[in-house]
Length: 236
Image 1 (cartoon, rainbow, N blue to C red):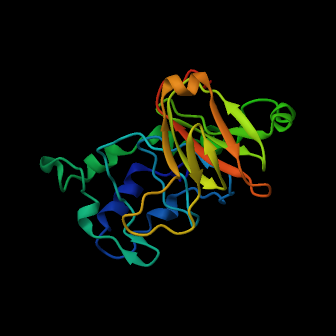
Image 2 (cartoon, one colour; image 1 turned 90 degrees about the horizontal axis):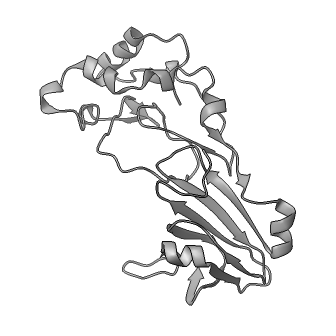
């Protein structure tokens, strides 16, 4: 993620010029961080990054920009058209235009870890939440375009959770009720089958409070909640 401080525009341009010559070795200039399950990174537009080796939860801002500057990924050759994908027709072949897409201040940030890394942050006192039968933490909280929380309802518990904004949710573990709806995490989804693992909660319902019941006596109920811009509960 990012570009090692001290790297020049000319060095990255050389990598782009070598895109069709095998491995263009652009990752020689990248900064790398060990993936820690349960943690996250804020990746604003223009910040070069490559996929890690774990399945990730990625709330994103809608964008019409696509840029693939690495020519070899996991021994798979990337076709040249992906390098220019999204580039205006008049700029195809202009490597300076590709370099202008990069946010150089973001990529060369000497405090990239400090500014972009996100550890889960409890929304309230951990002791208070535990006594009420649940645990909730901010997991995406450094962007003004979106945010996200992870909610865990302990086995056999019933809680009412209030938020100040509408959100979508996806189940990650367990089964129970969310308002009048059954919720569960499927272990197998067949083609064309409807599931009970994704819902949208309106602003009105979120502010009034959503009752969530974990019907299992042994398994936590875990969901991820993603919000759009302007979440009043988020402090940047």
